[in-house]
Image (cartoon, rainbow, N blue to C red):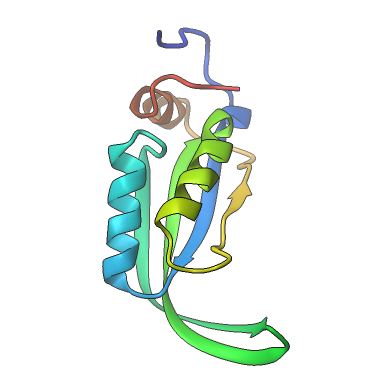
Length: 117
């Protein structure tokens, strides 16, 4: 059943995910959107990451995914990401926006099955 109350910005989450390349990023994005865990996922290829892994300084070219979802779906999105992502420790950082257009909020809720917090 779809939630009919007025959407709140606190319902929205923007999730940052990195992937090793465009093909993996596209597969992850299609999975998350296809399964209703995200309303939209943007793919930004060509980011350069510098990070520490097992005590060593690492560098990698990656693709950044920016997923728009709801607060209620973040845990499910993170669980599914762990199942489809090739990294041992996939990045999954959920951010709460401070502002968003009401029509956009409604669209995210509609595309994710109306699941709000």
